[in-house]
Image (cartoon, rainbow, N blue to C red; front, top):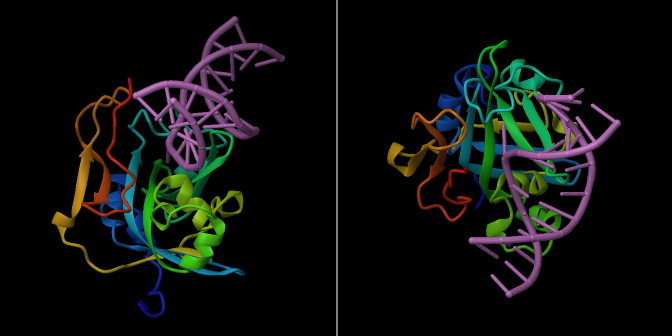
Length: 203
DNA sequence: CAGAAGATCATCT
DNA sequence: GATGATCTTCTGT
């Protein structure tokens, strides 16, 4: 199905809010990446908020070389490498100087599916972008995209179809680190086959 | 400088 | 449900 040309990118102000608000509102928006291989587009299905006060956030213990992008301009990308082999993609949130980011955990592919299949050879379509590191593979997001300006670059986000509030479920954070106040932190489209799975508290 | 943990995934039982 | 892969980043000494 062709939804026509991608809309304008989400404006900077969209990201210049708390990670919690952005994580909630980014559900249903589109993630787009244009490369010389072609364009891939997906609907954001699942996202996680990482606020400065969150012990699970890379920024919790202050600024370091790695997490510096989280303290910088909202609307840029924060891409980090983990487990020796995976990249994860965040949109930086909050006004500059306050650290915040939203991790994209899953999108539903809607354009460039064959390209995603090529980049994720051998997996079922359902697993093309279901999971933060699978998503970066399908979208060819890596080191080069760290600090990319999502308002004006081949990698951007734009508004999608509106989803009713009831279509979005929020998971309260419990038992992770020291912050156990039950605030929501993970948002996902309820019942979508692209949701990566329920949150299981560690420890 | 060593050690441990890590915002994960694929694969196996 | 458990485990190995693989290496960066941070922390403590």
